[in-house]
Image 1 (cartoon, helix red, strand yellow):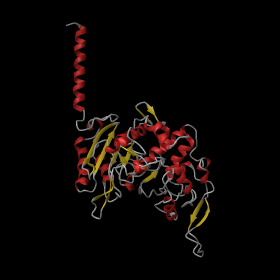
Image 2 (cartoon, one colour):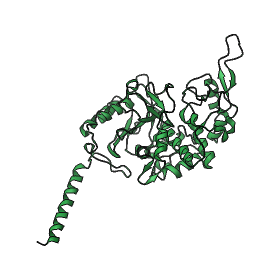
Image 3 (tube, one colour):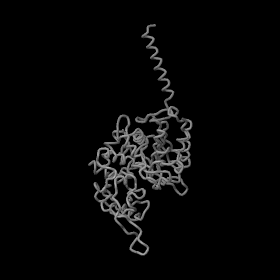
Image 4 (tube, one colour):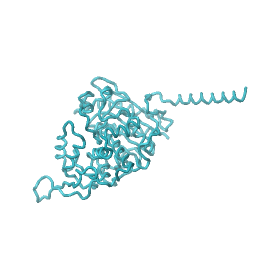
Length: 434
């Protein structure tokens, strides 16, 4: 046999071995979906047998009629090792839950909107400590509400000038003191202001009304969840000259191939939109909103683009966005942010201020809650992990230390009587074996 023939046969042998090994490692139970690179769990230091516990736990919620359906995704080292769709997309019709189901992600919109603003930061439009009144003059000369002294009976509160202006950093970190529906003296006024929203209003219209309400505290003094990320989205619009919808689509969704992320779901995709539920007195699901044209996500006119909570998306799209963040701002050759900006966004900006919505052991960055202490947080996610959830039960996290992403999509509100979110983390981390 000639030397050339010998080399050719050796090359063929190596090729066949490589193909055989590749087929052996190919995960048979994962969906074949464009934009979702998959791998056998063992190749990234996880146990496929242990990951099966995640499905068993989530199926238990479905079997008990506590949720209609769930999509869960776990990725490590850039590879998806678990991607499961269980239960029903719409229990009333019996439609099964597909992997590409479209969910209301609510406040999981916030990291995307915050990223959009930080893209403009990288283009030199602002510094974090700039006052937002440079672009939104309605937030100049703001007041702070205080309880009146006991000897005064002049109303529920009195006002004093704010000690400092609201900065871009304040609105990205929820430390601006804006009136909100959760806490503070201004809750009744906020509810009244919210009720004034009418068809055709934009977020800019709403913020002009919000700016007339006194703050709950001086900017920077505390952490309090609210509409700050709607201000973030409005700043994107003013600085870019585009609607938030246009900016996100052109600068983030299309470059990252996030094909199913929308403020308003196209009619052609209604068949993948999920129903929304609430628990009854027995903790069993009852329908809140069917996935029909009557949903807000199909309403006209489509001009209200809430950066705080307006998007609908899929597990696939949301994975792609946060794999970009985990990669230091880049995905498949497309760079959205620099690595240093991602580091800035995912650092703790709030010191030891209490992040009451997350609980002890957390701080807050620019659009994300940050794990700062494992003991008080009671989570297996590593220190430095960043996350947030949505009002309808969805959640995600990114763990840079473990190069790990977890995503849970379901649709129920309220959801705090369930452990679905914590169970996702427990069942993911117990499967790490390296």
